[in-house]
Length: 78
Image 1 (cartoon, rainbow, N blue to C red):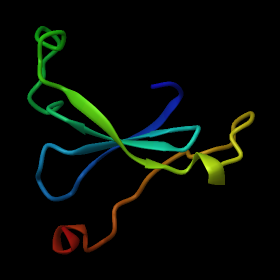
Image 2 (cartoon, helix red, strand yellow; image 1 turned 45 degrees about the vertical axis):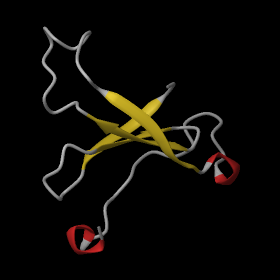
Image 3 (cartoon, helix red, strand yellow; image 1 turned 180 degrees about the vertical axis):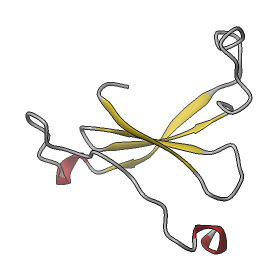
Image 4 (cartoon, rainbow, N blue to C red; image 1 turned 90 degrees about the horizontal axis):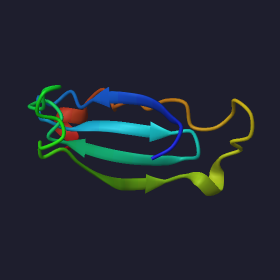
């Protein structure tokens, strides 16, 4: 991952985090809530790309994907 711009917690109480990159990639990150600084190297933190908006991005300079938001009814949508 390069140039992360936002990290947001899913409002459904799960262990899901969404991480955005300036270039347009969106990653789901799991296992981070149970990780500690001491165990981060051996923890089960995983990430996988769930979206690629790069073809829609103009990411030169300070432009690009700078944040993410969850739908107000996210819990009902899942």
